[in-house]
Amino acid sequence: MKQPHIFRSTYGGVFMALVLFSLFCANLSFIRVSITHSTSLLFLLWNLLLAWVPLIFAWLLYRKTLQSGLTWSKRNIIYFIFWLLFLPNAFYLTTDFVHLKGYFDDPQRIFDIVLLISYAINGIILGMVALLLVHVSAVKRFKNNGHWLPVAVLLMSGFAIYLGRYLRWNSWDVFINPFGLLFDVSDRIVNPSDHLLTFSTTLLFFSFYGFLYLIVWRFYQLASTLQQESK
Image (cartoon, rainbow, N blue to C red; front, side):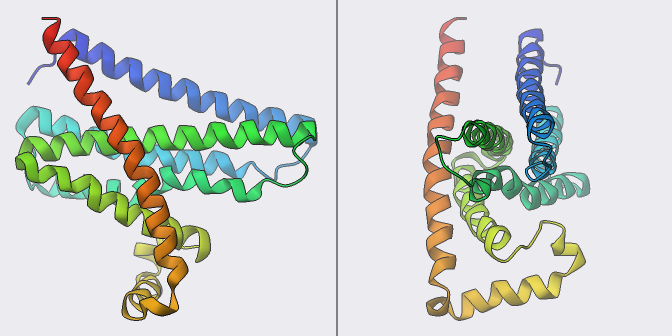
């Protein structure tokens, strides 16, 4: 299905805004290196790159939905799996505040606060847009049942953030060390009382990102309504 020019320009505008924001974050990182001669926070660039991965797969899946509907083709399944595996990386940037050290009245620490906030917001936006695209695709295919997708995905993302921050698992460990990952996950399911931090952290991030996404979804509905009223 050919998209009207207004939609193409809207997609392009969102993409360019996200690219510019990412370049802004990268520029802050390079400025910090030039000022402090320290590369201690340069890993944020890698984390931000990982945050782009789910958006790319979400866009590919969404485009297929526009063209022929959401079908269970091999290609769409691959897009969905990689989107799901890498989506927590976008939200994970919020936890990088653990690397903030020093006194808040130190100019360098203030710079680091702005740096970390920029990366965190960037990750949140990338994750929310990626989730929105797949959510819309699911609603087109499954109607009202598609609204359960963000609930399940955000719950899984909250758990994945715990696995990444506390147990240091990565998305690619699903392929590199699946049995080790499965052991840690199953242990927390079988013995929940021994892992209260697991469930409290999962619930914390599920609630946080759940409310944020609810706002994003309502704004999406508002934009759709305003567009229809303007015709």
